[in-house]
Image (tube, rainbow, N blue to C red):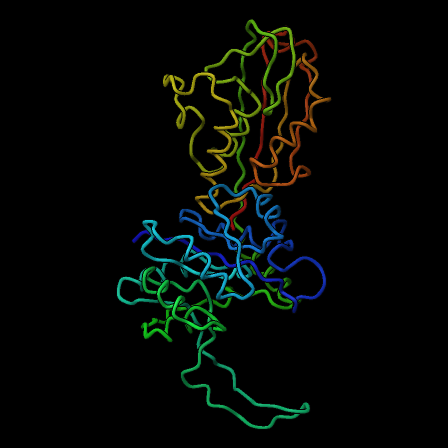
Length: 374
């Protein structure tokens, strides 16, 4: 199967109260949608947004996410995403609520596995509590809970069948399972998860944050690099071109700071260093902008289910002065790393005229990167 994940996030979430729509609010230092999107890392991801949210979506900084503008209702938004995928090589889709940020890889895998046998599959939890009816603050009756389930997402379907089902449906469905069943499709129930909550009311954020912190997986990596001076009139540091009386010697653009930072991320992932992924013996990397290496490291982290928490870069040089360029460096790094500038530390020091740096023979850099799962 060739699978695409459709993350539906065009709603306004009025039950959440005033403020940003719930999918754009902060959860553990990242927008809710950042967590939802990273849960599907490794798949083609289609994010369905409200037209007013295009800038917010771009600011997420998650590579490879395709944007589709949604409709006035949830099923209209899903139809827009399905139409966008028509004619592609996609054979199955996973349709997920953007406001469910805690779905696990295991839950997704169960849905995908069920599509080998069924036209559709969705996670759910059996209702275990007693069910009442009520009115005017009083219990008015009971209902049998046998055979009742709490529906969750992602809801997975074979692509041609769910596309035809949505086009035949009059609209107003509660979810895609309802659309599929109206078209006569069999939908399998797979095991859901209590953590896979949908953020609906303000108190749901506190619950989600507790779950997120309880399963938090953190990795720390360190990187180091050094480059000697050579003839030139500028150096590249943290993606910023700084005029200088010399250049830095290297196979790429010799951005010593970005090399150290990329190595810190590779190190946190136990993925070696830049040389393993971009051997200097290969001519295609000659003169390459080091931002390319850093993006590769960030994308590799995302594919493994990690986001960047914060980074710290220290540049050791007698000259040129780095301080005046720190804000520009943070502005370059923020979209690559997918984090705010206030999570990026860039600082510089000298070696007090000691060693090769003190003799102005080159520049060295140290970097640390914190990676957080989810």
